[in-house]
Structures are given as structure tokens and as C-alpha cells.
Length: 292
Image (tube, rainbow, N blue to C red; front, side, top):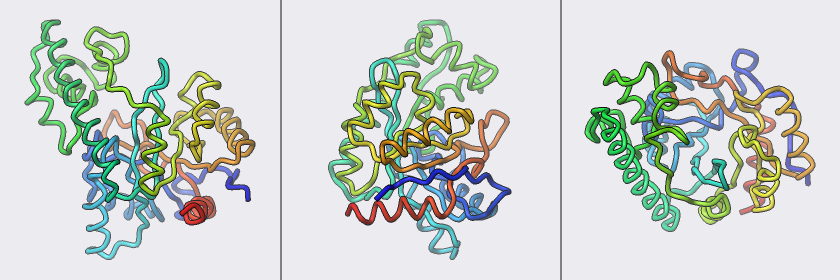
């Protein structure tokens, strides 16, 4: 059976039968709480969405509880985004239909979050060495959940007047090859794929168009990833066509999402600005059920 769907992405406003499968909350580096995300999705008429916080499942339970207690008609697909490194490139692996009861996954995610905090402390120390006054308490004030990452440091830098915007903070100080950058804890795409599979989920390579090397995309496919995030705001129409064709050739699932982090002047996208239709979601759901 071919598990792909090559139709055009459904944008909000064209159809309310739409699934946004890439959304972040305050459990990681989003600015809206899980409850606020669900409220916004219901208000915008989405059929479903997946909360895919970085390296944590903590946003899922409050979102599920809110849907249940408020009687909201919205399908929530349990998800995660695991940040991995492959050579000099980042490769983010999305997981869908994840079980939050898998102990091995929970233990590895706890390790990753601990290493993220240690990395943040090193970045803050480097910023201090550069004469920039900032401390971890100020960074923590921008982190509502279990995870502390560079976006929280960037927000603190802006609030303290050391940068104009979060993008400026990254560019001047904390992105790769900048003076306060610290390499992160390394986890491979292969391990992330394995963790997701063991937790009952299916794995998808996030925003593959941002990976410059096609050979690395091919290598991650060979590791056993089950889908490609074809529809993504930063993918060009040409990339969408190429990635869709690659998914079909490789018999991979096609997914899509907005990578929504929150409202505000620096928000790259709107919730539901990119996603897939109900037919494509049905293919993904059937694939997952047949693999169990």
C-alpha cells in the first residue's frame, strides 16, 4: 500500500477541515499555554492539531484535560519534536501518537532537558564574559515549562535591552558561530526515531527543506523515518514539489504544520497557516493503526 497523499496543503480560510501538525506551547519554547493553544485552535475552526513541544510531553495532559472538560470538538494528536544533530546540520524529528507512559522515552527526555539547562548556564556565563549582564533567574522567568532553551535566553536579552528582537539576539550572540554559542547535547536522528517507535509513535523528518544536503535527507530516510514534513511555511513551492515527489518515491507519509510558537510581532506564522486535510490525516492515522 502507498502511504502518501500529494494534494496541495490546506490553508486556513480555504477549509476548516484542517490539521496543523506542528505546534509549540509554553511547555517548551512557545509563548501560549496548552489551554490557550486549544482555545485558539477551536476559535479558528481547526479540525485537529498536534502539540509537538521540543523534547517534552508536558503540554499534552493539560491540553487533553481542557478539551475533555470543556467539550471542545478538536482532535489532539499526541506529539513531540526531538532536536537532533547530523554532522553540522540540525535534524528535528517529529513523533506522532506518542505514548506518555513509555519509561525509556521519559528517562531520555529527562536527560536531554537536564543537558539543555546545563547548556543555558554555559551560554549565560559566556554572555557575562562578554560584558552582558544576565543571569539564569532572568532566563527562567521566560520559561514556563520544564525546558530552558536559547529562545528563552533571547527573550531575556531583549527584555534587558541587550538586543532589539529575538532574531537580533540570536544573530548577535547565540546562534552557531556567534560569541556566546555553546554546542548542544548530541542525540542522533537514529536514536530519536528509535525512541519514537518504542513509544508507539511514528516518526517524521521536520522541515527537511531547511537541511541543505539532500544526501543527509536520504540518510535519515534510510534510518527508518516514516514521513516527511512537506508542507512547512519556509518551504518554497519548488521545495514542496520536490519533497512531495521524494515522499512518493520513498513511500513515506506526507505531513505539514505551521511550527507555531505564539502570537506577537516576531511570530513567523499563524496557527493553522499550514497543514494537511482530513483525507491526508486519515492516511496517517490508518498507517499508524496498521503498524501497531
